[in-house]
Length: 208
Ligand SMILES: N[C@@H](CCC(=O)N[C@@H](CS)C(=O)NCC(=O)O)C(=O)O
Image (cartoon, rainbow, N blue to C red; front, side):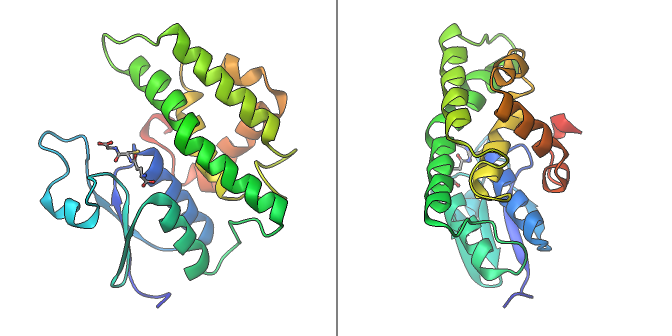
């Protein structure tokens, strides 16, 4: 089954597709990215709704096994393929990792990407002062919870992958560098993540 073809459906601009791409790259899995643009006029198309009934990206297939929801996809990638473990084993590290992943879903992705990065890159839209405040709060919480080198545990884990997919956009906003620099550990982690081969191999177009 390891050798069955792997297909990831989505677009390279997507934070959640990036998370899956980083997990696949970290494991050294060969896969084909099948382009789906959820923001295209008319939506992602009927065939994509059969893969992801809620119309989001990514969706994933390994042979005839199909999945959607990023958390399920990366959990499958961790278990189905060889390569370095992406989930911490130790109970405290593992649960910290899961906590940080959910912080990305529920707070970091909406605040850093949708409230700051997206309005700043869209014409005629300004970032509201309270959006920068919300982003600063997310960064402070993450800086407080993260470990000394990695987000959770002794090596790169899914927590780093989730966090980087959101922060790689935020650090390109006007106030992003200054707000990140307020937290020395987080700033150093960002510098390391920016150079990490898994980040470099999966960069957003704006990072090229
Ligand atoms: N819960 C989904 C979230 C995926 C998600 O929000 N994807 C975004 C792109 S990064 C999307 O498809 N947005 C389109 C929309 O909300 O209409 C997952 O974990 O896979």
